[in-house]
Length: 108
Image (tube, rainbow, N blue to C red):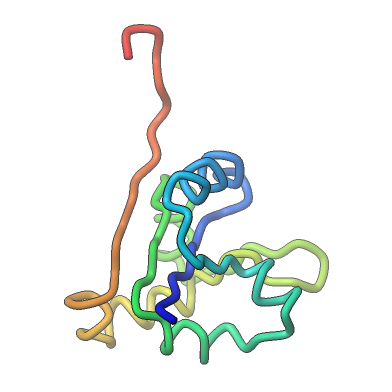
């Protein structure tokens, strides 16, 4: 079965959840990986597609190679994502889908 990993910061959680519901595939988030006791890096490399939810916060975490955490858990690993984007040409060419969430205003 093909799988997709959704990468988003906590602040984009509700928008990313809405997008995930629309896509309806077998999609895994970091929380799903934790709940199923799966290794993030292994699943990342095994995935047929990586969906990166982009935002100012996500871009900052990636550029600065920082992690977003909740307690002991990493909820967004900007360092790992930065490494993959710069060193893994296959990911960028064949597997990466980037979606940038924007604020809607009254005229949208």
